[in-house]
Amino acid sequence: MSRASRAPFVVAHRGASAARPEHTLAAYELALQEGADGVECDIRLTKDGHLVCVHDRTVDRTSNGTGAVSEMTLDELKSLDFSMNGTEPAEVLTLSELIELVLDWKSRPTKLFIETKHPVRYGALVETTLLNELQRYGIATPASADHSRAVVMSFAATAVWRIRRAAPLLPTVLLGESSLYLSGGAATTVGATAVGPSVRTLREHPDLVDKAAAAGRATYVWTVDDHEDVKLCAELGVDWVATNHPGRTKNSLDA
Ligand code: G3P
Ligand code: CA
Image (cartoon, rainbow, N blue to C red; front, side, top):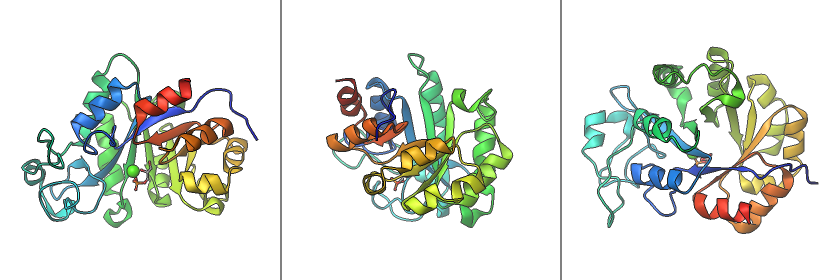
């Protein structure tokens, strides 16, 4: 069942989020120090049109505030503490701040895996704002998908399709939990360059990796924190694993 020719690349899920508060500068700095090949973030639009790195619809779980991200301005969000208590105070991170951190990290060309959260309810506004942002940093139009510094991901097929149409060389991942959905026509229809099953889906359908490869697609698996799952992904030839423990995962793949 193995087609592995090299170990999967390691993506820090919400930064090194097992050790630092998710989506904070501290979490991403640690991920970069630990040698992550990529960093993952979720993005949402604020009331005044900025993209911020927040997973949930509201800030309730991850900050000392309450309310929906979409109903708060960036200034309001910046006044909250996202450090989850007991650590140094941490501001909400904007996508621009994360891009700058990654591009300034000179020791390796770390990739940025950007997941748009529930973009469909905003029409194309999330995708347009995101592409403008990537354009501003000169990374929206890579010379080739392989050399792209950004990868755009979504559970929403429409969002992936919009990105592919507007920026054909930008790599995209269609995320999902159904093997039928990922290995069937959806990824082809929207032109995704990779499919992104959960690790549970991969355990149940290990043939997904070969099916994706046969269709010319890479595989990105989330969230791979267990040692046995890391081994399984390596054996199957998964291209990218997203993990909350980037340092530990890199070490176990190198061992
Ligand atoms: O990397 C994809 C994965 O992050 C999707 O799940 O809920 O952690 O955004 P979630
Ligand atoms: Ca995510």
